[in-house]
Length: 234
Image (tube, rainbow, N blue to C red; front, side, top):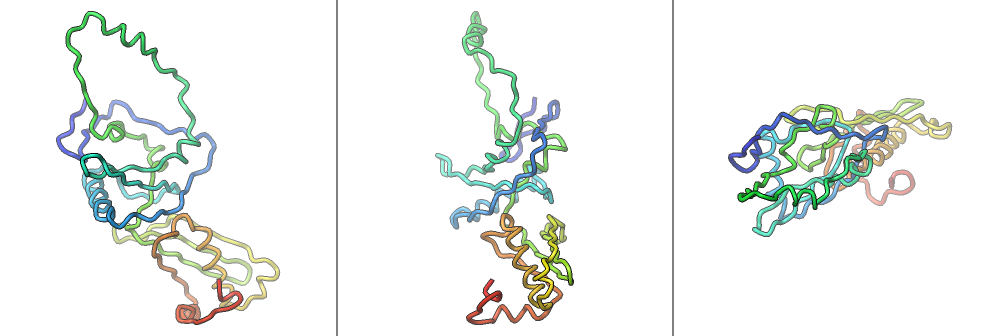
């Protein structure tokens, strides 16, 4: 057994580790949602506490669920994560629940009935190493960087996130140019890379500020361009 001493400290129960079996299903990624303004300070406070106490840790996994903050009856905030998409691809246990009647019958002859409650129950059982990445979630705190580049025949990108002051790779993308696209000028190829991979990594980038990093200086003038038309209006 383990006993917690304070909030964000559920104890350290290591006798059992939970495993999430997804079979052959691909990792799930959810689009970012906006955090209500009145929740942002409390969201940051929860993140700081969970990092400080080891409840969570920074991750570069290819999974992305989304946190949800819910106001409790006492006015405090409950930190939740929307794992419905993960649940949908997780293999279910087939072991049936015990019959309630038999559980009640087992109480016959007893005089004392203690009532125990698990503090932060979902934190009570650790995840095994293979399952931890599957519970990764996105936050708005650490900024993303989209690195893009173009060549004569293809374009590519790397999505990075600054975590603890260090740039860490999150995902990669590449695309082979069509016959028509190979005739684009260099600037348009570089612009195509920015547009295509911004769309590809939309679940990570939607609803948040991020940096685009390119070695093609000519793209900078687009920031001040007025009334763009055609491809420049991408």
